[in-house]
Image (tube, rainbow over the protein chains, first blue to last red):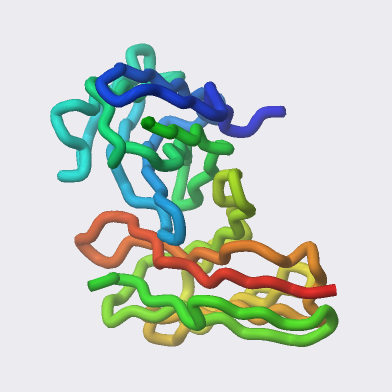
Length: 111
Length: 110
């Protein structure tokens, strides 16, 4: 399967813990995006990389959130000191042109 | 205020019926994309429309981009239970970030 992959698929954590998610994009895609989706809503943009450079961050991305793409391939999204409001589906997408291709997402539940 | 509005919000129909869902904006989009998302999964890209007035067909799905590139529609002919899902439109208006609409949740009953 050469699509976008995300790990883990599900994560349950206690409030205050740190979590890290991984995204492996389609190999030739230079752009990588992170989105967050809550129930009944469309995905909301969090941040965007072109190769290893983080070019844009949404105001939704508080200082507890950090994303990296160290070698311009896979990316990680870390959430520190998780809060219940962080519970959501975290989606990664990659693109080469206009069309974005999404991974299956990581569902985070903060208890 | 949503940059992209979608209607209807929910739609429940019987297998074999036809339906149309809409994606509207007051802004001009360089392109619009339609996705289908099933529960617990990421959105799956269905189509990208680029040219005003463009019509694209994907089996029983017909996508149209408005002449002014401010709106789009998705028409499904003879809907099947496998068409059930959340249909999202998304795009970037001039000078704006790429955004998603809130989606139309379609349920096709056998």
